[in-house]
Image 1 (cartoon, rainbow, N blue to C red):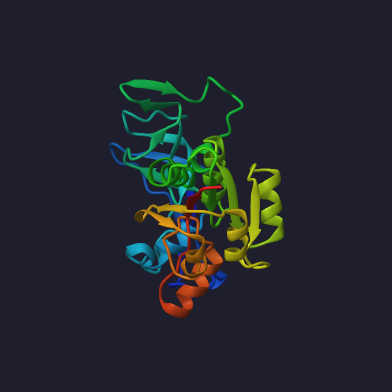
Image 2: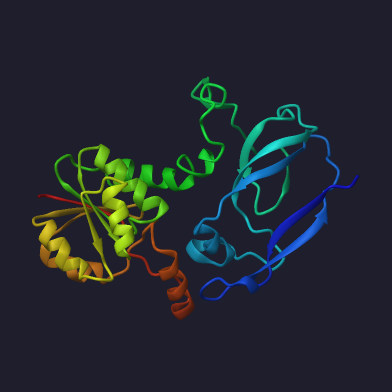
Length: 284
């Protein structure tokens, strides 16, 4: 019996906000495995804002061609294998795309055991309650972006204010929680009252500012008087004084947590995304 694979491909290069016409669902036969390959049934796939960037030329990506599979990280189960390192039945993670089945030549992560230094750290089996989605969720790419952005590029200073833009997103919400764990007073910028309420009630942010309902520069001056130390994943640390906040917030900065709707609208208007403040620390 020939297995069928449903795949979501890009029908055309998107312009502005994504729409249904940018995608097409197709059905193809699953090809036979070659030596060294494994067939994976995709159980979970990621729907992430960065996919919008992969589809065009944001951040230097080579634009996808119409007809290409929508790329995405996923979690799956090996249903057949001709690879000596991947056993049938294994739970795996990799860049499988939006499809029911994926064929890998070994570029996949076995979730039963992950390398940790020169040891092997068991993952599944030790905690049966651990969800299969964690490699594309709380321990996925967004969390790694937040972790290294905070810990390496903009380390919090205990007792000082820490401001996160795009705080309601997958990167910003984690970044704020990491900064809070490191002893900072965390202030998030988000675009709706619901997001702000979620940040303070669920994510343990100390304050949240709705930048659409109030002037963020005024609110930051009120909450964060004194000298600022700013760092992002694209620039070295620099000092800010309150008088610079208004002008700085009006200028583009790199932000891993830039709202997707803003990026799409500005890409449509200007041909490329504009970005805003990512992380900042200030004296109380």
